[in-house]
Length: 443
Ligand SMILES: Nc1nc2c(ncn2[C@@H]2O[C@H](COP(=O)(O)OP(=O)(O)OP(=O)(O)O)[C@@H](O)[C@H]2O)c(=O)[nH]1
Ligand SMILES: [Mg+2]
Image 1 (spheres, rainbow, N blue to C red):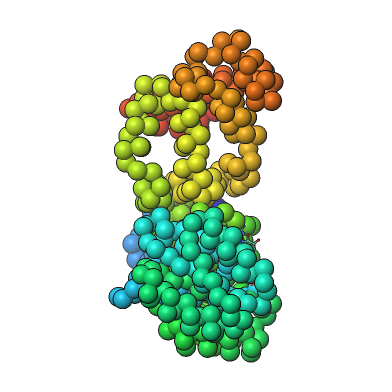
Image 2: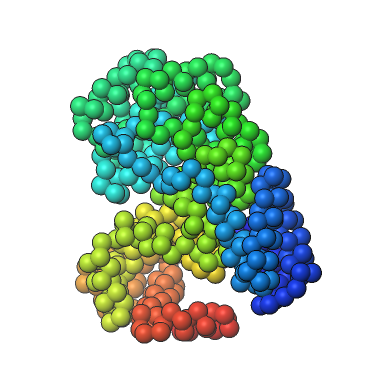
């Protein structure tokens, strides 16, 4: 993700005061240069960013705000290449997407993530496995398709070009909005891969040809993307594995060197971990200002407004139950990993890193709550205050937990609902953040 770039930018910005002289600007630019190069930003792109930032800052008067704005603007200039963002639809459906990339870059996973993204926007999607190199590749896509309840095209043909032709006919007759073709990868670019790909492309005439680039691949990855672009022509790049300890600079380098817009980024192994790549929002994240628009969009696609209102009411009244809690956990899971959500909140970018290993499926606490709730009667689920000693014993027996687990969890839940109640009141969030910064968390 962007933590190292972002914290480097912060230390560069901190070298300049509200209003300052040229010496301070040079120091800040030096720090900026170090950060950019350390993060694998291509040297020519680095030079351009430094030059533009210097010029603009001087033009608007040397000072912290002017430096920050100039830096944002020069980053935006690089990322806004091509002018196309996110997903675009063909004039006449179905919109055909060809997914390409090296072996193991994340093509198949990305096909499923993209299908899931479109499905949450009420689109009918067909997934087509054109990777017939390995039998497992087709099975992998089928399993992912089942997981997100999306049809995967079935063919007996052993020739990817034939499969593409058949799927194209089916895609048109089946009234799909989007058809996504997964293709085979190779360890390095070779002629037969390129030939197969360009033939599939010729047949499909896709609306978009995406190249999946592993964010960890550095300058090598940029060169390969370039080779794909020259040989088959790509229209968008999806950066995968951006959740790993990648140097965020690859995003800037790809945009600068290939001139192809980044359209999405993969932020984890789970299906929901796909984020739109919108240059202005990325720059906002880089500057430590988060991406609240993106977060709001994600939330809106998952949670319906009525449910959100009901939950808010319950929290305010302090009647939020275990069942509500588990339902909300399911909703959060649909939005992606906890750390990628945190990185969208202003000032929380650094916290995202420490939450990298939070796993809502396997967290011990959530497992205990699930087991406990499953052993409760419907009445108890709605009103945990009914849980006296003998009921707690019964639940412990039924769920295989210790009474002490139940006591602790009930206490924590009670504290959390009190906290949530406080937060839901006017000014609650500000007060909470204030307390957090002083390390005082209310009980
Ligand atoms: N952490 C993380 N892992 C990812 C991401 N995208 C894909 N992966 C993992 O990368 C591995 C390879 O992903 P695949 O989707 O099978 O890659 P592929 O390009 O289809 O591979 P081939 O078909 O063998 O060429 C899998 O273990 C995925 O779970 C991501 O955004 N973050
Ligand atoms: Mg694959």
